[in-house]
Image (tube, rainbow, N blue to C red; front, top):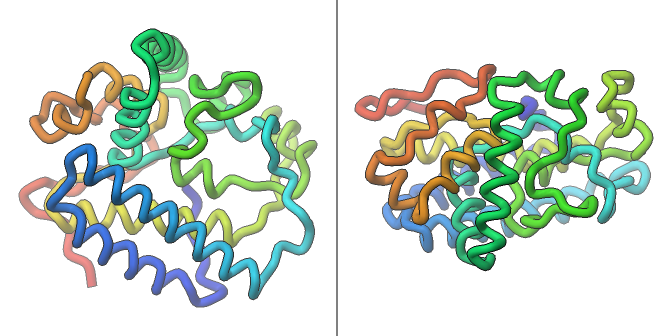
Length: 245
Protein backbone atom coordinates (compact mmCIF):
# COMPACT_ATOMS: atom_id res chain seq x y z
CA UNK A 1 0.00 0.00 0.00
CA UNK A 2 1.13 3.53 -0.70
CA UNK A 3 1.18 6.21 2.02
CA UNK A 4 -2.05 8.18 2.23
CA UNK A 5 -2.28 11.95 2.03
CA UNK A 6 -4.82 13.83 4.10
CA UNK A 7 -5.50 16.70 1.75
CA UNK A 8 -9.25 16.64 2.32
CA UNK A 9 -9.11 16.36 6.10
CA UNK A 10 -10.98 13.06 6.41
CA UNK A 11 -8.12 10.64 7.03
CA UNK A 12 -7.74 11.15 10.79
CA UNK A 13 -11.50 10.82 11.40
CA UNK A 14 -11.63 7.70 9.24
CA UNK A 15 -8.70 6.15 11.10
CA UNK A 16 -10.29 6.94 14.47
CA UNK A 17 -13.57 5.37 13.38
CA UNK A 18 -11.89 2.18 12.23
CA UNK A 19 -9.83 1.91 15.42
CA UNK A 20 -12.99 2.28 17.52
CA UNK A 21 -14.76 -0.38 15.45
CA UNK A 22 -11.87 -2.82 15.82
CA UNK A 23 -11.67 -2.21 19.57
CA UNK A 24 -15.39 -2.99 19.86
CA UNK A 25 -15.34 -6.15 17.74
CA UNK A 26 -11.92 -7.64 18.41
CA UNK A 27 -13.12 -9.78 21.37
CA UNK A 28 -15.33 -11.68 18.90
CA UNK A 29 -12.72 -12.52 16.28
CA UNK A 30 -14.18 -15.88 15.36
CA UNK A 31 -15.24 -16.40 11.74
CA UNK A 32 -18.56 -14.65 12.33
CA UNK A 33 -16.92 -11.75 14.14
CA UNK A 34 -14.36 -11.26 11.38
CA UNK A 35 -17.12 -11.35 8.75
CA UNK A 36 -19.12 -8.74 10.67
CA UNK A 37 -16.07 -6.54 11.07
CA UNK A 38 -15.20 -6.74 7.39
CA UNK A 39 -18.77 -5.93 6.32
CA UNK A 40 -18.67 -2.81 8.50
CA UNK A 41 -15.27 -1.80 7.14
CA UNK A 42 -16.49 -2.21 3.56
CA UNK A 43 -19.52 -0.05 4.35
CA UNK A 44 -17.38 2.60 6.05
CA UNK A 45 -15.08 2.74 3.04
CA UNK A 46 -17.87 3.00 0.49
CA UNK A 47 -19.73 5.64 2.48
CA UNK A 48 -16.56 7.69 2.97
CA UNK A 49 -15.62 7.43 -0.68
CA UNK A 50 -19.08 8.55 -1.80
CA UNK A 51 -18.99 11.54 0.53
CA UNK A 52 -15.49 12.59 -0.52
CA UNK A 53 -16.33 12.14 -4.21
CA UNK A 54 -19.26 14.54 -3.84
CA UNK A 55 -16.91 17.22 -2.48
CA UNK A 56 -13.93 16.41 -4.71
CA UNK A 57 -15.12 14.35 -7.68
CA UNK A 58 -12.68 12.65 -10.06
CA UNK A 59 -11.73 15.02 -12.89
CA UNK A 60 -12.82 12.37 -15.41
CA UNK A 61 -14.53 8.97 -15.31
CA UNK A 62 -12.51 6.04 -14.07
CA UNK A 63 -11.70 3.38 -16.65
CA UNK A 64 -12.31 0.52 -14.20
CA UNK A 65 -15.07 -1.86 -15.31
CA UNK A 66 -16.01 -5.52 -15.22
CA UNK A 67 -13.67 -7.50 -17.45
CA UNK A 68 -10.78 -5.04 -17.10
CA UNK A 69 -8.32 -7.01 -15.00
CA UNK A 70 -4.85 -5.52 -15.44
CA UNK A 71 -4.61 -4.73 -11.73
CA UNK A 72 -5.39 -8.41 -11.00
CA UNK A 73 -1.85 -9.24 -12.15
CA UNK A 74 -0.12 -7.17 -9.47
CA UNK A 75 1.54 -7.84 -6.13
CA UNK A 76 -1.20 -7.39 -3.50
CA UNK A 77 -0.62 -6.77 0.19
CA UNK A 78 -3.24 -7.84 2.73
CA UNK A 79 -3.63 -7.98 6.48
CA UNK A 80 -4.06 -11.38 8.16
CA UNK A 81 -7.69 -10.50 8.93
CA UNK A 82 -8.37 -9.88 5.23
CA UNK A 83 -6.74 -13.18 4.29
CA UNK A 84 -8.75 -15.05 6.92
CA UNK A 85 -12.02 -13.46 5.82
CA UNK A 86 -11.36 -14.20 2.16
CA UNK A 87 -10.42 -17.83 2.87
CA UNK A 88 -13.41 -18.34 5.16
CA UNK A 89 -15.80 -16.95 2.55
CA UNK A 90 -14.36 -19.26 -0.13
CA UNK A 91 -14.77 -22.28 2.15
CA UNK A 92 -18.28 -21.23 3.16
CA UNK A 93 -19.77 -20.20 -0.17
CA UNK A 94 -18.38 -22.75 -2.65
CA UNK A 95 -18.95 -26.43 -3.24
CA UNK A 96 -16.26 -28.90 -2.15
CA UNK A 97 -15.18 -29.36 -5.79
CA UNK A 98 -14.97 -25.58 -6.26
CA UNK A 99 -12.95 -25.22 -3.07
CA UNK A 100 -10.53 -27.92 -4.21
CA UNK A 101 -10.12 -26.14 -7.56
CA UNK A 102 -9.39 -22.81 -5.83
CA UNK A 103 -6.90 -24.49 -3.51
CA UNK A 104 -5.04 -25.97 -6.49
CA UNK A 105 -4.94 -22.67 -8.40
CA UNK A 106 -3.75 -20.75 -5.35
CA UNK A 107 -1.11 -23.36 -4.49
CA UNK A 108 0.17 -23.45 -8.07
CA UNK A 109 0.44 -19.66 -8.27
CA UNK A 110 2.07 -19.48 -4.85
CA UNK A 111 4.71 -22.00 -5.94
CA UNK A 112 5.63 -19.62 -8.77
CA UNK A 113 5.35 -16.25 -7.04
CA UNK A 114 6.45 -16.88 -3.42
CA UNK A 115 9.18 -14.36 -2.58
CA UNK A 116 8.71 -12.41 -5.84
CA UNK A 117 8.90 -8.63 -5.46
CA UNK A 118 6.32 -6.19 -6.80
CA UNK A 119 8.10 -5.28 -10.06
CA UNK A 120 8.75 -8.82 -11.30
CA UNK A 121 5.27 -9.85 -10.16
CA UNK A 122 3.69 -7.26 -12.46
CA UNK A 123 5.84 -7.95 -15.50
CA UNK A 124 5.31 -11.72 -15.09
CA UNK A 125 1.68 -11.11 -16.13
CA UNK A 126 0.57 -13.94 -13.85
CA UNK A 127 -3.10 -13.45 -13.00
CA UNK A 128 -4.56 -13.73 -9.51
CA UNK A 129 -5.76 -17.26 -8.79
CA UNK A 130 -9.24 -15.87 -8.08
CA UNK A 131 -9.56 -14.34 -11.55
CA UNK A 132 -11.75 -16.19 -14.07
CA UNK A 133 -12.71 -14.96 -17.55
CA UNK A 134 -11.39 -11.52 -16.66
CA UNK A 135 -13.56 -11.19 -13.54
CA UNK A 136 -12.82 -11.56 -9.83
CA UNK A 137 -14.62 -14.59 -8.40
CA UNK A 138 -14.36 -13.15 -4.88
CA UNK A 139 -15.27 -9.56 -5.73
CA UNK A 140 -17.50 -8.94 -2.70
CA UNK A 141 -14.66 -9.96 -0.36
CA UNK A 142 -11.71 -8.52 -2.30
CA UNK A 143 -8.88 -6.93 -0.27
CA UNK A 144 -8.61 -3.25 0.57
CA UNK A 145 -5.68 -2.87 -1.85
CA UNK A 146 -7.88 -4.12 -4.67
CA UNK A 147 -10.67 -1.75 -3.67
CA UNK A 148 -8.26 1.18 -3.74
CA UNK A 149 -6.80 0.39 -7.16
CA UNK A 150 -8.10 2.64 -9.93
CA UNK A 151 -7.06 4.36 -13.13
CA UNK A 152 -8.36 6.88 -15.65
CA UNK A 153 -6.92 4.97 -18.63
CA UNK A 154 -6.96 1.19 -19.19
CA UNK A 155 -4.18 1.50 -21.77
CA UNK A 156 -1.94 2.96 -19.08
CA UNK A 157 -2.73 -0.10 -16.97
CA UNK A 158 -1.79 -2.43 -19.80
CA UNK A 159 1.52 -0.67 -20.32
CA UNK A 160 2.11 -0.59 -16.56
CA UNK A 161 2.42 -4.38 -16.59
CA UNK A 162 5.37 -3.94 -18.97
CA UNK A 163 6.90 -1.35 -16.65
CA UNK A 164 6.40 1.39 -19.24
CA UNK A 165 3.79 3.69 -17.74
CA UNK A 166 2.81 5.26 -14.42
CA UNK A 167 -0.87 5.47 -13.66
CA UNK A 168 -2.94 8.59 -13.17
CA UNK A 169 -5.43 7.70 -10.45
CA UNK A 170 -8.12 9.16 -8.23
CA UNK A 171 -6.06 9.45 -5.02
CA UNK A 172 -8.97 9.58 -2.59
CA UNK A 173 -10.11 6.07 -3.50
CA UNK A 174 -6.61 4.71 -2.94
CA UNK A 175 -6.08 6.69 0.27
CA UNK A 176 -9.40 5.74 1.88
CA UNK A 177 -8.79 2.01 1.54
CA UNK A 178 -5.15 2.41 2.56
CA UNK A 179 -6.23 4.18 5.73
CA UNK A 180 -8.77 1.47 6.56
CA UNK A 181 -6.17 -1.27 6.12
CA UNK A 182 -3.54 0.60 8.13
CA UNK A 183 -6.01 1.34 10.93
CA UNK A 184 -7.22 -2.27 11.04
CA UNK A 185 -3.60 -3.39 11.48
CA UNK A 186 -3.05 -0.83 14.24
CA UNK A 187 -6.22 -1.85 16.04
CA UNK A 188 -5.39 -5.55 16.02
CA UNK A 189 -1.87 -4.80 17.25
CA UNK A 190 -3.21 -2.61 20.05
CA UNK A 191 -5.41 -5.52 21.09
CA UNK A 192 -2.26 -7.59 21.60
CA UNK A 193 -2.29 -9.62 18.41
CA UNK A 194 0.82 -9.16 16.23
CA UNK A 195 -0.02 -8.18 12.67
CA UNK A 196 2.00 -7.73 9.51
CA UNK A 197 1.46 -7.10 5.83
CA UNK A 198 1.18 -10.33 3.85
CA UNK A 199 1.36 -11.18 0.17
CA UNK A 200 -2.14 -12.20 -0.93
CA UNK A 201 -1.43 -15.47 -2.75
CA UNK A 202 0.96 -16.82 -0.12
CA UNK A 203 -1.40 -15.86 2.72
CA UNK A 204 -4.40 -17.41 0.98
CA UNK A 205 -2.48 -20.64 0.30
CA UNK A 206 -1.64 -20.94 4.00
CA UNK A 207 -5.20 -20.15 5.13
CA UNK A 208 -6.88 -22.51 2.66
CA UNK A 209 -4.75 -25.40 3.91
CA UNK A 210 -7.09 -25.44 6.94
CA UNK A 211 -10.78 -26.31 6.97
CA UNK A 212 -11.31 -23.64 9.64
CA UNK A 213 -8.57 -21.04 9.08
CA UNK A 214 -9.81 -18.67 11.79
CA UNK A 215 -9.71 -21.37 14.47
CA UNK A 216 -6.30 -22.48 13.20
CA UNK A 217 -5.04 -18.88 13.45
CA UNK A 218 -6.26 -18.55 17.03
CA UNK A 219 -4.69 -21.87 18.04
CA UNK A 220 -1.36 -21.09 16.40
CA UNK A 221 -1.70 -23.90 13.85
CA UNK A 222 -1.90 -21.27 11.10
CA UNK A 223 1.27 -19.17 11.03
CA UNK A 224 1.31 -16.41 8.41
CA UNK A 225 5.05 -15.72 8.82
CA UNK A 226 6.03 -17.38 5.49
CA UNK A 227 3.64 -15.02 3.68
CA UNK A 228 5.02 -11.77 5.10
CA UNK A 229 5.81 -9.16 2.48
CA UNK A 230 9.52 -8.71 1.99
CA UNK A 231 9.08 -4.93 2.16
CA UNK A 232 6.85 -4.94 5.26
CA UNK A 233 8.04 -3.87 8.68
CA UNK A 234 8.47 -6.63 11.30
CA UNK A 235 5.38 -7.35 13.40
CA UNK A 236 5.15 -6.02 16.95
CA UNK A 237 5.89 -8.66 19.65
CA UNK A 238 2.74 -10.31 20.96
CA UNK A 239 3.69 -9.53 24.57
CA UNK A 240 4.37 -5.85 23.97
CA UNK A 241 2.03 -4.27 21.41
CA UNK A 242 3.21 -0.93 20.11
CA UNK A 243 1.87 2.12 21.94
CA UNK A 244 0.20 4.81 19.88
CA UNK A 245 -0.41 8.43 20.69
